[in-house]
Image 1 (tube, helix red, strand yellow):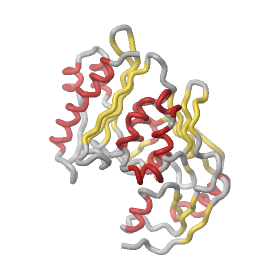
Image 2 (tube, rainbow, N blue to C red; image 1 turned 180 degrees about the vertical axis):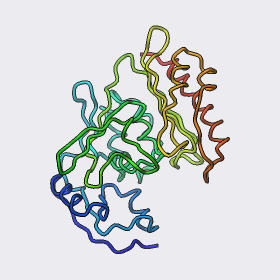
Image 3 (cartoon, rainbow, N blue to C red; image 1 turned 30 degrees about the vertical axis):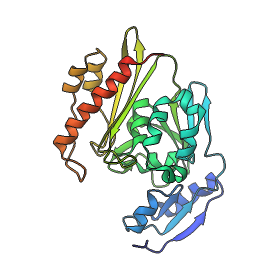
Image 4 (cartoon, rainbow, N blue to C red; image 1 turned 45 degrees about the horizontal axis):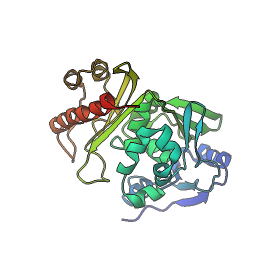
Length: 280
């Protein structure tokens, strides 16, 4: 299929992009990596009147450690994030997730901010951001604001972004010697969207762990935290954590709800071992 007709413009500055979004609202879409947008255009699931190309905006593709946080610009390509020493050293959960995102050709073009803004419930990065307790910086006509990951993902492909706003950067706490992370997913083929996945963080506490955050993906309309299982896992009891899973997945083309619930337990056992057995 071919997309419906649309106009095209290339924004050179953040202010220009935001002004165009404010003017056209729901009739406009941003073009960054385009790895999700082009597919929805071709299937006519999206039919904007205007595409705003933001690839010419300078300063939105940086990756840097700033104090206690790692900042990732919205236009940073997945491949750039995957190869980054800053990410491997200071954001190890994201480093674990990157090879699972699509295939090399997709990672060469797709952007970090685009994945967060698109908010596919089976995607890795929204779940990582939720597990890390990160925040999203967005820009609009009234300037910039920050939204916590726990409040950003609202529903199926729905976020806290307003029609005239765009993601500019993502920030996550920089890892230290007490940081523990775990990641696993099950997909039909490597690079496919996950049937079920799990991103997790914790902090070392003596011989155990504390501050556990478990973010499942592929099991709901958004990435989902399982707080009862988090509490149970903090005691070191993996069986109790699996039994405490309160996920309510739905049947989809990949698997039944029953299968997804079972696989979530399998992944929790794998990731729990990563958290509990990790060493500085």
